[in-house]
Image (spheres, rainbow, N blue to C red):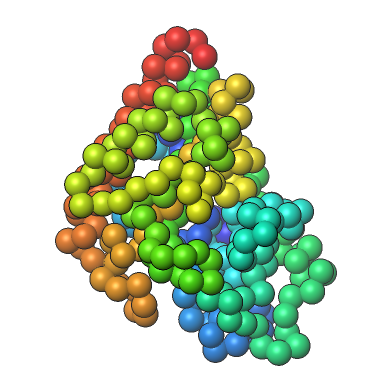
Length: 269
């Protein structure tokens, strides 16, 4: 099983996909209960949604499922959102708070350590290497972390989630011009709702790599799945008509980010 897929590009923009993978090794799959085996908390079809929007962008995609280990969580196990319901490094429950492991088969500390070594660390080593490669070409790199989630999950948040959820850890992970340009395009997208640093402020990937003072910028986009799926329930089918409309705005966002990154390069950031 290949742990990740990389397509190297020449753009200063890197797209990361930590949660679209659905591969679960047999010895781990056997420990999941029937609910866990549904793999419901996948970022369904996100790599397809972004495919070809910025042809020269580098992409790094994890193929393993987040129930194996979550590639967007702090390897120390520290919560992203202290005091709020969330799932951990190796989730014990799904997004509805329901158990995903067979009784007595819940991952132990040794399992987590093993999965950190086998899955989490290699994925991030690959992502870090691509960031360094791209920065070596341009003097700047912009990591755009691609996510999606159901729009209504009472266990995690109240009400309905906006369509575009932009996360920059309150402006810490990227230059203000990147944050403002993405927020502007999302705000002007007719028929869609948006928020900046709302319930999702950027996961560990965004917070870990986003060091604008060092020429590495990071921003997370969490899309409400209703914006591109027929329904937010099995079989989580991709809606071509919805996706076509949404892709226009995502393309505009990525192109604006790339233009901004080239401007940084030309200024000698």
